[in-house]
Image 1 (cartoon, rainbow, N blue to C red):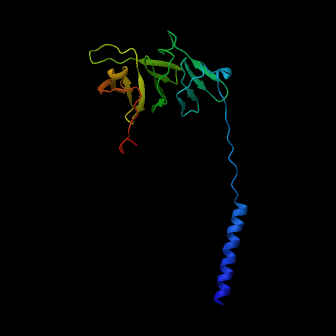
Image 2: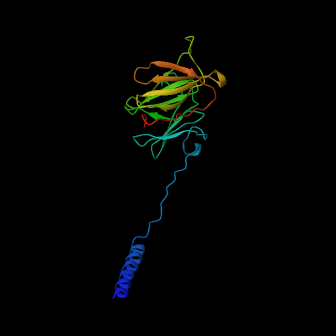
Image 3: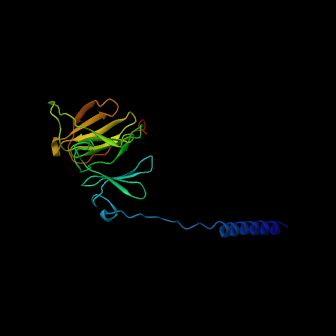
Length: 190
């Protein structure tokens, strides 16, 4: 009798496993790619930074303007005297604030894309002597307090800034060397 019960248990488990394997076959993954290049409307083909915002737009940096892809077409933003962009070389990733504005840097300054106005506003920080910094901007983090962490300057002459996106107040934190910096987030920041 014990042998019979174990055989029945084995057959039931075997039937269950084989039935589930046959019925629950995984569906193959379906990947969809949309290739973008200057032939499809990009301002330029070198794109180091790509960001999908909360509204679904894809933002692509370039060495010749900023590109926004809506799923069908590309809108190009280039520096003009009236649109608020300083320079066309985007030097950082994109960071979306709690108002859905987009923050990033070009070589010449910090930029904020205000979605409601479809316009850019720029900020140039000052060094410790009060002189306007006109080159070498690289944003690498937007924290929970809406402060943008930015490196300015070139080579060993760089400084770490914390720019308050709400008040536009800048704090120079310390000298910092090197070209690219990345934050190490502690548990309080997550």
